[in-house]
Image (cartoon, rainbow, N blue to C red; front, side, top):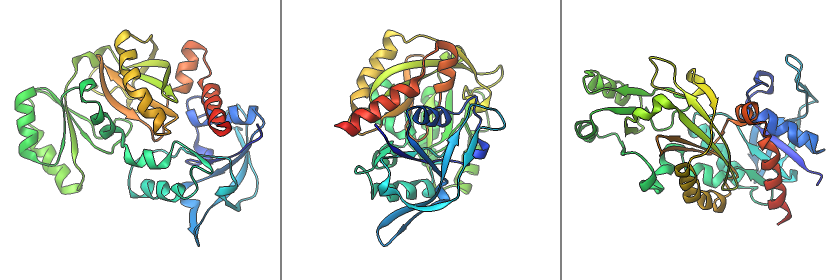
Length: 314
């Protein structure tokens, strides 16, 4: 196939080429001879029903400090693309949601990965609620009395913003912690959004497993170990990656959610599993490709493009 591919993502200048999943996805597209274009979400627009972006032709290299060349910026009709990647980092806010509304206007004639409708309709922390038998005890609410009651029932809890990312704003409230009420007061004063409350899983000390699914099939995983004195295992919060294998329980979880991911056009997803419990389904801008390749030698970006090409042929 010869494809025109637009990358809607954060500034290419700031990409960490040793860790960024979008970078290796784009490098694989370039290796296949596809034509690449880059634009920032701020440069996306809709005029008279036509979805456009001020985009630049892009060439990539796996060279630190010299990893890209871009051409002149040009206003481009995104319906002329074969594939558009929705890959900017969260926060999952109204700005992010607006890009999904605009990309809805060209999908699926132009294939948007992941499907913008389903990205919008399945926020990562809420999506798990469709699989209640797989998740730890979980509450989503702004009702402080309900939160206090949940704590009284489960004692040891995790409190996190519903639309946060990278471990930002996540608190471990232990049974003897006296700060929950103050934390709730601060959140309610600063935000209109609900919180997610989950029973604390001590197994997080052994790691938070990130499993990559491509078109609903589990294809690789890494384990992320939190630092001593840290409740969060996210790489952004200093989590240490290590090699791991899928357990029977991991495969059970993947088999349960995989068909739903595939049916929704969520081609590239990353799920988080702690102690045999599903805690998140990441579909906005999943990461982990380079870490898995470092340990297992598997270039999953090739499998992603195989799945995309199969969809385009179909």
